[in-house]
Length: 93
Image 1 (cartoon, rainbow, N blue to C red):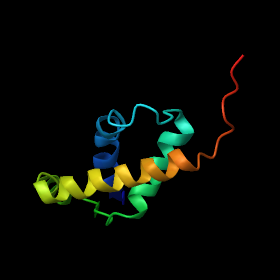
Image 2 (cartoon, rainbow, N blue to C red):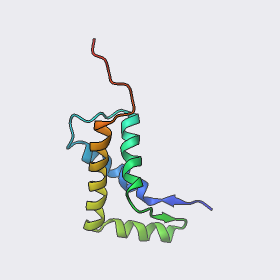
Image 3 (cartoon, one colour):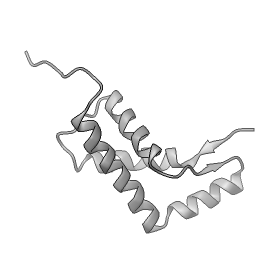
């Protein structure tokens, strides 16, 4: 049995669009991963194990209210990660 959290796909599909609104935010793999994880931790999981369940999750994800919540959580995560990145700051030569 394979379990899939559909919310991961939604967050990853919206991540670049929201990051474009924050030009000074680091986009390294570490920061992108931290932003996605932080956003996912504040959103309800949407698991499915069947094609029917995946279709149901996709239909729900199309609602404007659902999309707004995802974007808000990504934006909050960007603010937090930007203030406290886990990677070493880049040094300029």
